[in-house]
Image (cartoon, rainbow over all chains, first blue to last red; front, top):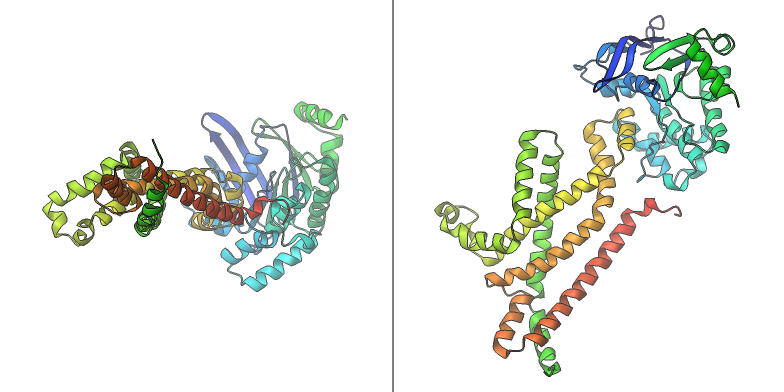
Length: 250
Length: 231
């Protein structure tokens, strides 16, 4: 996947997505190059999650083109899993495998998808658990961990697959306030290391400090796309101004 | 009316001679029924109408008719057909025990497949999405995520069905099988003491039910250890 740095890692062109008659995405055009960090914000129901879920085909788009690392996502795509293992995803509700210990959560896909040996998979798992600072939880079940810890495990689980791209779908929205920072710190570290990231989040401090571009979506459209300083200080559209004034007013 | 304790003391050992048959019926049809149920479940969730539809019809027929009638149809009905008498299954179907096991298997399979389906539907969609997002195939998702989680979810309802099956085995006595109930009926016919005999028979079934409950309690705790915060 890393062959063509000149070519964008993610390309979306004229993407439309319908849920029945409701149009969730309208003519989405987005390019993300390797190493770029994108923050996506917008009111609920604006299509943010749907957009990133189209990138690893958890949702199928109806029109337009989506090309990930040179592979176009189509109905005919033979091995969607080959694309998915290069795209890590972190969900709002963590979605850890409840019946497996933390370390097994991290090992499963490595063994099944990457065909890595058990010993090697365990090593990689422990390496990433240390990076998210909870190696001591390795043999517990997810239910025994706090929300913040579970979300860090979920990030580590995605990283174990050595993905090219990380997608974050409101990773801190389900967390108690005191746990948000521990998750954001992990994400900031990742960003510093040059991971290509798309984060749907309303953590505007995070957007300011790490994003290369901030995207504002409303009613299924990309309304505004700008570097963070410009986005926060000088938003062009009325809708963006309204949104920012509401989330930044407290 | 007097309650003849001596008679109970004398007949209990006789009835207990039927335990072997009762357990054989329970374990063999329970096991075969579970395999049948898994096949039916896979047909139901395959997403293909030509698999799903026959499974639905099957489940409807076997849940929609009394098990006693099913036993009679198999025991009295099937031998009427020459094809059945000529088939390799005849040595099994000639025996009342074979017929009872077949009927119990077919019946419990229908119920258990729906119990398992309930478990499968209870697996959170998010967990499966996480599997897919990691690049796991639908088959891997099913084997490593859906199956173990659904098993734990279905267990309480499944233990209910096993207990129900234990009691259904008593119906085998209607086609000459000498299980515990069959023996009890013979003793009653000899002694004209239905009260003592059937009450002690009932107590024996209750003791076995208690054992099954305990067994499933242990399995539930073992498979559900991930649901407890401590440990």
